[in-house]
Length: 196
Image (cartoon, rainbow, N blue to C red; front, side):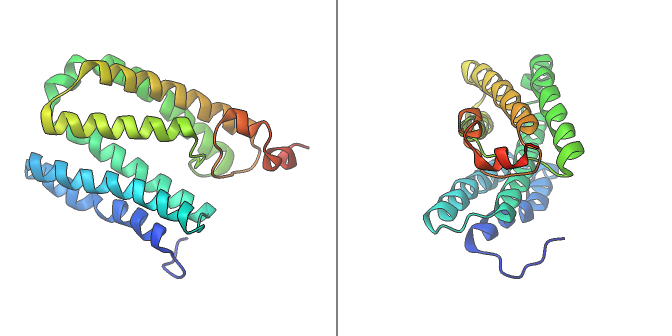
């Protein structure tokens, strides 16, 4: 169970994303597209800030990585709900591709919870690029409307990132954070220690 004792500044930026969720949901309910999009932009911005601060101040921790992941998942979910509310025609037109993209993600989450009892926090380079692309696409769509080539790129990147996450789950017997990718995992001593 999380307590507020000894949280660092990067953790508080992650907390902001979690705490902002009710406000974003209220803005959705009130059909306030512009306000919702601006506050969603702030939430996405805190994701970049907390990661930068954690690395710059050398305050990375498994707890911080997990908080960051929870904040990311909540922000992504609310962003997708925002697309459903404000860009329903686009979602309806592309629902099959969206389902294809989300099924492996749910499989990955299931495997992680079954193996580790919690979500992964690998924070690979591919995951960061995928999250950045998703955030950019969602925000651009809410501000200006969808760009199809970016949508397809986001789907492909998301699928590749999910495949990498699933592979990493099978490579690590114990939960670890901050793995740059499969190439780095092959040389990671934490992985070697977990092999019996």
